[in-house]
Image (tube, rainbow, N blue to C red; front, side, top):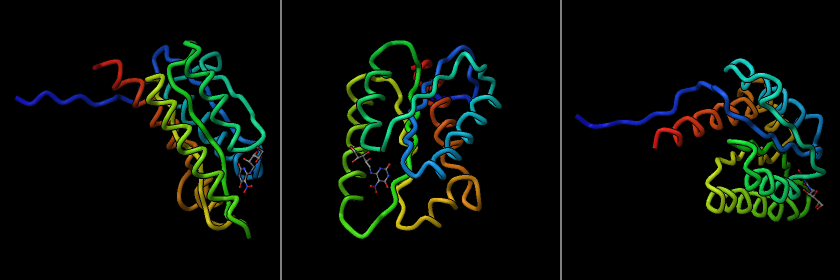
Length: 154
Ligand code: INI
């Protein structure tokens, strides 16, 4: 028989940190609500969740790294909204934050979830922040719960 391991969506005593970017706050705040709601509906108490605000998505990485390396949380959920403008600034922000978050996962082994919207338009971002394409914050929170659970079984 093949042994299969799957993460359950149960929070238990796990602690979660959320790093949230204030840039495009009108939308990112919806990702935060979605993430908190998902964590709580899967059993997290208020004391198991810490939220840290940063100015923009570029600033997510250093804060997420400190949280992941600090040993006080089981997963870090990174939330932000990057929307393409008229210059290539968007590319730099997306590249830097995606590479930074990958590196935190490799360096610390603490699941650090990429819950950052990278969209061409404001409409695309709104669609993914609690309207017709769901809420990427809630999806990121569910991924964090699953990763904590699956890693605990390996
Ligand atoms: N930060 C974002 O989170 N989203 C964006 O869309 C964005 N754009 O397009 O400029 C953005 N820029 C700010 C950046 O993250 C830093 O806060 C800033 O460069 C200071 O380091």
